[in-house]
Length: 274
Image: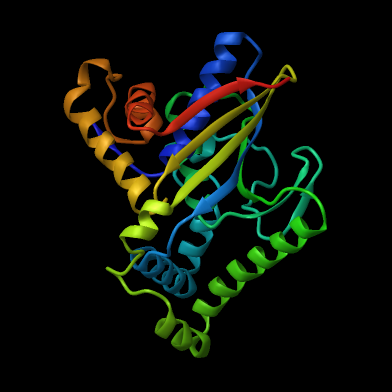
């Protein structure tokens, strides 16, 4: 078995929502949105380098740029995917009435959403024929929330745009961390993340999955996920499904990994809210 040990909070969270909906008999997943409610950590030089490389490659290769923009880029059967209209990643700021908050783009959403959609396809589209998934940052309600959302969205846009142009790229190269550079020990310990995944089913039922962990999201919390994934694959084989290939966390390890992460202090919990 070969798993993609990334996007674990997103992938396992949606899997748990699917399992809860299935157990309750309330239909199938439809509109599903991951909202980042809190994230505290330092920038990673390796992540910045990856962003630079991807930006450079997409700028010089039109076909690659189109592939990166495809919401089903990781699908094992692209032609079998549902036609649900525009599913592009959020780029600007919105006041989402359904969520009751201002939302803006989440920089990891373009990766995580593809992994979650691949999980759905690898499971025979069990999540539902009208499963729509996106990831955003949440800023609450009110005028200050709107201003914060605009500031964050503007900053992300400026960073991506700045990396695409030579004059600003030269300036950013001087101030952004290099590969191997990242937050110090104290900053890693103080870090954390909290996400909520909201789902509405085909019967109109509503659910929320809460996922949270202590420690810098890019270093300490992720290190726990990588370590527990390795232990899961090494020692929990009898409890895993018999699958092989390029799998995702949900299809390779699923609930077995979730239990390990809970035991390690991370939160994965589902609640029906309506």
